[in-house]
Image 1: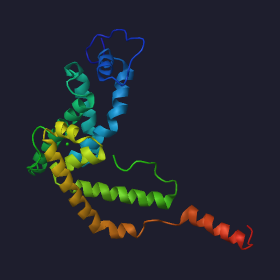
Image 2: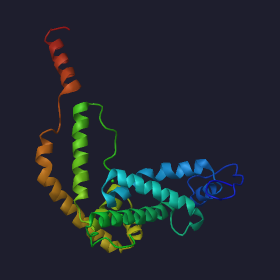
Image 3: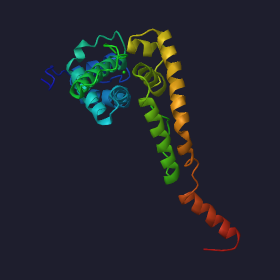
Image 4: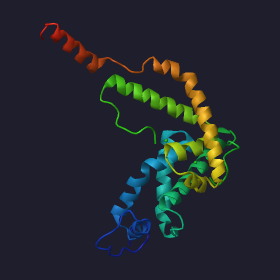
Length: 233
């Protein structure tokens, strides 16, 4: 017997890890590679979805951890009627909303009225520059986007996170949030307007540090010019 109370059977010689049903079947056999594959594949997305609800990194991490435990304990309930990613998304959403309600009760603050009962950051891709000044500017921009996203009304933020940050299609977002595709498009349009307004109000101070030219780049240029002027090191 495995830790989840299931009987472990021999795995097939080859396994298609891209196939949801095969992956779940392997996990039900207590194949550690299957669990590891599931978490590696969905960790980032599930964290960002949870973060979009609770707006706190540590709480979001707890939400994802608890969601995995619940999902793995009920894997036999996955029927393949939706994709594994959608199934996990819903578990994380429900767990995040449950956590948010608990926090609201403790703080005696009402849960936002526009969060429905059954319902949810990928920021710009690419490695952070190895130039310290440029890396700092990139982090400032990402922080600005994160803050602007956090300020969106809840329903707009959930759509924005799913569509823009996670890159889900309109149809997948509608299925995930249990709303119509037309509602997804409307909320995304309004979210973008509010996000742009928020960033416009704060972009000035950030731009003061944009396009940095200091540190290693500044030193390299200085040395090249000095050499051309005949001042050899």
